[in-house]
Image 1 (cartoon, protein in one colour):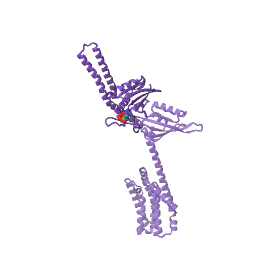
Image 2 (cartoon, protein in one colour):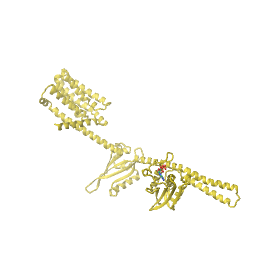
Image 3 (tube, helix red, strand yellow):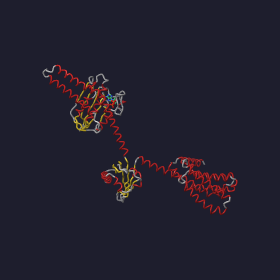
Image 4 (cartoon, helix red, strand yellow):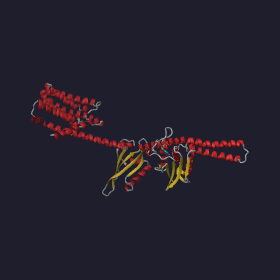
Length: 557
Ligand code: ADP
């Protein structure tokens, strides 16, 4: 007994759980069942009254009156259900026709005039509940109504009318059997429908979210099939694109077609583990859609020849847009960092230009005071020329920073020259009097790089080194070069005692700075590392050096 009760409880819980899970799409489908059910019920009962009830009892008979009024209850149930179900999305509203028929029966049974018709009325309501239940199996509410329509009369027979149970069973056993079968069919079908729909929705969603369209190609007869998503990617409705090989060929960019053929051949001949190729296909609106196509042979004949080739199309426009916007963001960061470096450079540059200007001014004074002195003119003009050259060099260095294009201009350039120029225009010159500069093993070596970008990296390292060394008692900065295999190592080291371990991990993260607001942007190292990587090199912090050292690695031309 407890086992049976447990099973019943489980079953009931399942029914109740399922009652709560139906989607909007389910609802509309179920709602559409109301009209055909009404028409079928009408077609069944109308001839029954015309052929059996009216000729046998007449229109004045109590039986006909009862059926006529019951019919009105049922019709009202249908009409109100059809009307209200548009506004109130509930299974209860879809159950109104059956509730109408139950209400009708109960009303007539409570009315003494119809009392003697009680068994007939019960049967009538049960038959209607069954018919509606069978047709409207999608609406779970009907299974509950069938159960009510069966058990309520049973209880009334047994306890109010005191009819023995065997007599009830004898009278209504067929209906009880039919009800049991119907309820189980109703329940099973509605659960199966629900599961099927959920699975379909999930797989649709999966396909949609992964942007995958699918295709099949029968290699024996060249029959092809493209699914709706495949066509949707290209802007077409399912019926607008014919399922044939020509459709694919025509929509493909010509040069890409050849590439796809090569990929297919490579796959067939075992050079590639699967068919994978990128191409562009023409959208209905005329633009090109970037596609990644993948495929696999899933069937072969007895001789091992491939017979069925299936695969997917992935629209990667979103990825392209994403890459583009990342690229733009990167450019903006590079630009921001250039500006920051430029700001840091300004002080150094002002100092650098002031020095030669002072020399020019001195020379001018000397010439004015004693122009005739032997050798003076040559000596001063040389001094002036030297200073002018120095200023020109600095201005040239600055001008490079005004380059706005984003493309790298890589060429073979002497890295020593870049290091020396970076030293010239870094902030070292403004505060450099106190800082000892050590240049170690700077040799002529060509590196294939973008001069400006590498200069930017070095200036950043030098400015950071200056900042780090100034807090030490004997500040120094060492710039050295070394060669390892095909790489050139440029090390910028300062007298600082190294960077504390807990921040080393964050050093290269954008916007990480320990400098006061307005002084540091935290972009320098992250951009510098990006530049090094764009050059197929690296930028690393030298751990356990004893001092603070950064190493820039660049491949030799
Ligand atoms: P910013 O210089 O604008 O702070 P960076 O990305 O160039 O941005 O540097 C990030 C952080 O790395 C600095 O704030 C500093 O804490 C640390 N750092 C970099 N180089 C050195 C150095 N030579 N000595 C000490 N700390 C340094």
